[in-house]
Image 1 (cartoon, rainbow, N blue to C red):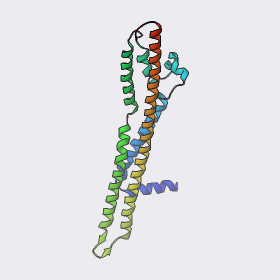
Image 2 (image 1 turned 135 degrees about the vertical axis):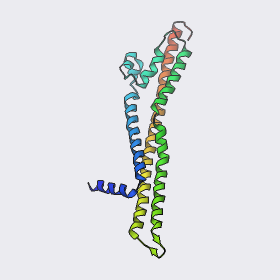
Image 3 (image 1 turned 45 degrees about the horizontal axis):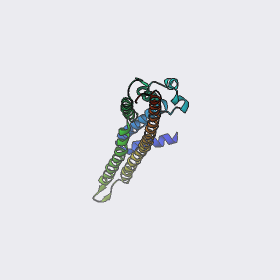
Image 4 (image 1 turned 30 degrees about the horizontal axis):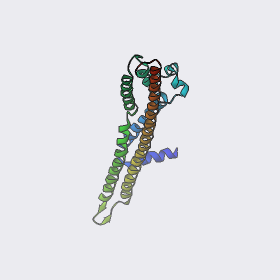
Length: 204
């Protein structure tokens, strides 16, 4: 309980800069929760047995990336291989765009949060300097309050930026690994299609 009171006091000391920083923090947390759900629900790599079986992929959610990518590879059996490759590449680009939704916001918060914290630092220090009179220090308590405001704003801005940075780097790496897995999956399926076409004596 005391910890929460201390946190509330620190936020109150931080001044008006804490409010936009709080908004950025809420946005970052929302994006992290949303992307975590999407990656767990629709981007988890199925086992090899599920990948190799059509009915296994059909049991996955309709928005699952492996099921989405399997559609142009299995559709139109008479279609030439170049057509399926083009459809798979276009769908892979759409999947990458869908999975990276919100990444630019996290990247923006990484830059904006420290700048807002720095702005709070400048405002707090200006407030402290204004309390110096011509005859010396007028209000010691006001000066320390202004310094505290600047330090709290800086600290909050750095915390929000670090959280967003770690989240952005993690999801970027996760997306990169996912696209590599999708590429391997598509190449394996296309190889099976080529092999089947050659076995039937049909030009792929």
